[in-house]
Image (cartoon, rainbow, N blue to C red; front, side, top):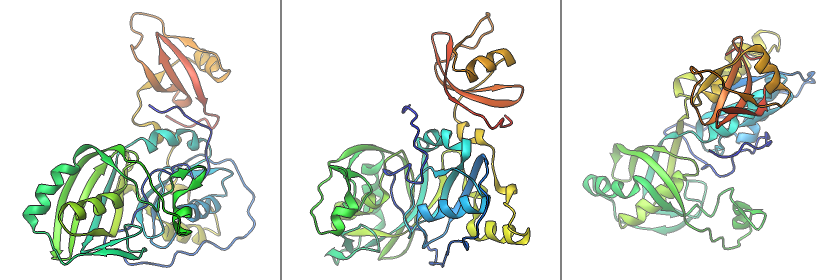
Length: 341
């Protein structure tokens, strides 16, 4: 488990792949008009269905404005050509972002065979072409190489830093970017469809740090052709599923119908960001100790035997993110919103 940091800005996840939507037409997604609104303390998760044509930073800004939130961040970058699941944390929920970022991501993506671009997607320029079009049997055989832990070289146009500079900034300036291969995990990859000889649709469940664009690039090369991402949609992040997403247009519609009030019905509780962690209920007295930065001891023969991070609740409220070690709970993050748990 990665250590939790205090970073809660909109660029929290710079190493997750930038992705494109599957068979989703580009739509205009302008930001809301910037009326002056008093900022307020508002805590929770908005599970946004990010539209094509908007950056993740713009999406966070739009949601932050609609809810008049003081603080916001997201749990996994999607490029403008991407659509799908962009979890946006408001207020105290930003403290749970690292745990959401560590979750598995599911993508559905279309590979265009015969062309490799310098960005490994449709935004780039063609750098290699091939007349070879892989057969279904060849694709199925090649997919075995992309399951489990593999070594993957990130795209040159990525948000990774080289000597303090973003790789995509260097690449846009014409500087040759060389990124080292690193281990990533692809838990599942399936061939969903072959609509024609030029395209194949896949679904993949990936671990943190996996670049779907690199899968398209590398699979094309392995099959004796070339390939790039023509479309991709992220359908889930951790426990956040596609069925729970809300389009930005819907949020704006609700807000306008309520005279610019925040669309609170789409605000999820802070604790859903900790759904993958064990939960521990403590007394009001122990909760007070944790809130004041003191560790507590798990006593009694019925005390749970746990190690690692836990979501600590008291009287039905999320009070702290603790770390269990040798029968003690050490407070790592305190929640001041009094979120129900």
